[in-house]
Image (cartoon, rainbow, N blue to C red; front, side, top):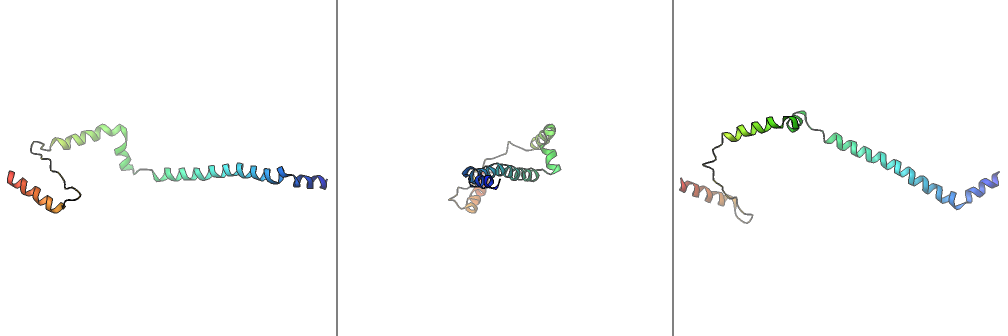
Length: 107
């Protein structure tokens, strides 16, 4: 009986193949558990505050749109002027002073 056991242990398939098979199958189960932990942690991190979640809720979107419409209704758009911001190579403070001077001349 021991001789058969020794022959089995010296067999290349048992010596190299079975550990490799156990590593591949066991590794897939292990990776599945670790990736599940990762996705569970992402779910926990992505939970919103209740106040923010109420604002994002699609059933209440019409209420939010009505609030925004009420805010925009009071804005005077006839006196609105489009003022260009400074370019990256321009000095922003100097350019803002020029814009203010032009606006003061116009009024």
